[in-house]
Length: 169
Image 1: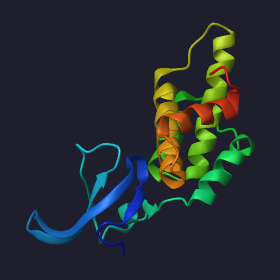
Image 2: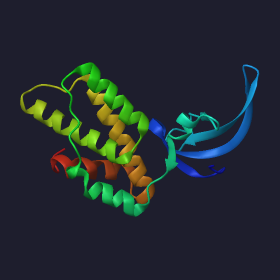
Image 3: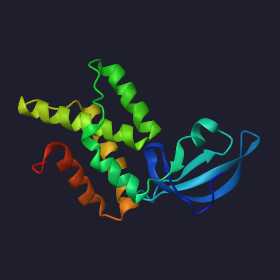
Image 4: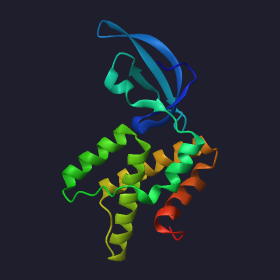
């Protein structure tokens, strides 16, 4: 069980603070909820039913500074996750974003940034759904690594890009 004021990573929302654990009545049923505020989006509030194992399983402890450093050091050794079929690729990428696993997110980001570079060399563009997935993965990775390491998030995002494709990006 998580505690109030604990900082966690939640699925595609990223780094959140558990601001309270409360009871709410919905459709005549009273349930306990984790109430979370994303650190990088003060306008959002996320409610996760404590009894919903599937949703609670998407909450995890944030990476440590050492884990963030290791993730960045190994960014180029992750698998390439490319599927030619647009629908299957979109579904897989959404699943990875929903899971929120940092290693899988890093592999997804690496796959898409390399694909983007290859397409640009042929004067083509990445599909908009792939571009959105790439930006979301980048945001989630850079924010969590930034939180863990204390580095500036924008600087970390630039560093992440440079580690994959070189300093020109």
